[in-house]
Amino acid sequence: MLFKDVTTRHLVEVADVVTLSNPYELTVVGRYLWGEEVQDPEVFDKTELCFLSGEPLPRCWHDSRYREKEVRRLRCGTEAQEKGDCHREV
Image 1 (tube, helix red, strand yellow):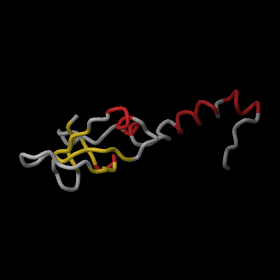
Image 2 (cartoon, one colour; image 1 turned 30 degrees about the horizontal axis):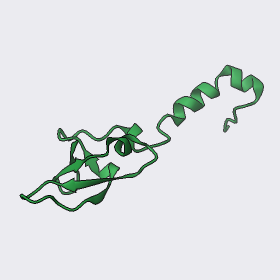
Image 3 (cartoon, helix red, strand yellow; image 1 turned 180 degrees about the vertical axis):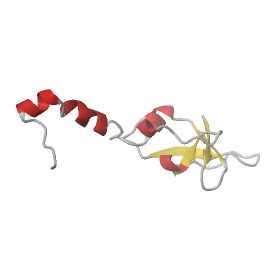
Image 4 (tube, one colour; image 1 turned 180 degrees about the horizontal axis):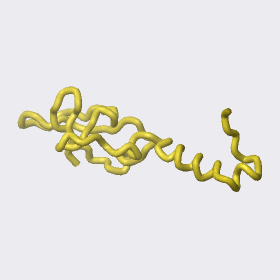
């Protein structure tokens, strides 16, 4: 897949889509696309990549805690409060 490096605005080719979409991996191996020769692989921080349109990568691709607020909200509902499972700060 092709992406754009946010800092340099150069195209980056990422072959391993599984690592790219894994929120526990903060980096991905890719290659810059410039010139006629194939560039050496480099490690890219996923937060420094974006789609070609300029849209950032989905948060669930680089943040393993992206659903923490939702889980806490569901867990700390009325049922969890009655059981004493939820610790709310006052």
